[in-house]
Amino acid sequence: MQNTLAFVVTTQPNSNLTTTAINLVHSAIKNNVKIIGVFFYQDGVLNAAKQLSIPSDEFQTLTQWKALKSDFNVPLYLCITAAEKRGLSDGLGEHERSTIDNAFTVSGLGELVELTSKAQRVVQL
Image (cartoon, rainbow, N blue to C red; front, side, top):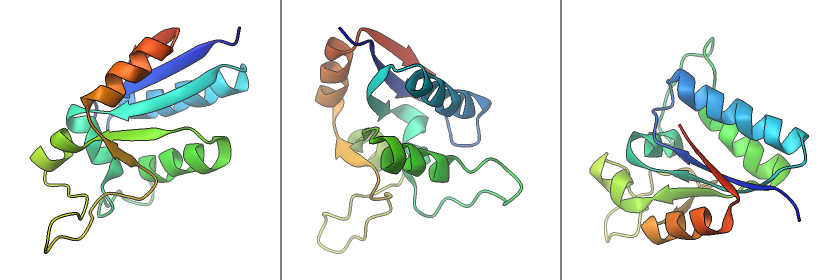
């Protein structure tokens, strides 16, 4: 049986813990651990903001999350309630445009429950 791991990210994009989460995902993949998903909750939802502007000489978290999705097919789930509370929108309202990067799948806490029940281990940062 293959090792499975889920991540819960609750830290802002400029946090060292977010960088640690990205590095842990890379390390797990390198060690043949299957990442069943990364769930972004609380301030962690800000990692999905399209308009996020991080200075070019700093670690580019959004670019790194998108690379994990495209290069290793790591699912990225975003709690829409937490996102909306922080000013992000999925663009489904009548006059809204999405402010969430399309690498992220908009979901709810039910997705978090499912991830944690399927994973052998859960890491929260």
